Image (cartoon, rainbow, N blue to C red):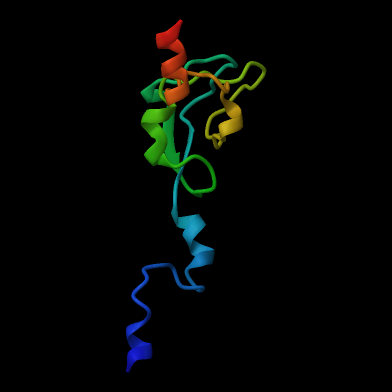
Length: 101
C-alpha cells in the first residue's frame, strides 16, 4: 500500500520525460529581427518545443539587444547567445557600478 502512495516528491515520471520538452514552449521571434535590434514585447511569441528561453522570461527579454551579426528570422528559437552580454539586464553588480559612477 505504501508503494502506491509514492514518496511524496512531485516530479515527472520516467515515461513523461520524453513528452515534457515537446509540450513546453520557448520564446521565438515573431518576425525577422535585424542584428542589434532592441527587443520589444511585440517581437516575441511562445511556440513549441520548449528547448529555448522559457516564456516566463519574457519580461527579462524586453529591452535586451540582439548580438551584432545575429539576424533572427521569423520563428527562430531564441537562446541566451542571441543577446549582448550587457544588454539591459539588471544585476546587483550592474546597479552598484552605476550608482558608484
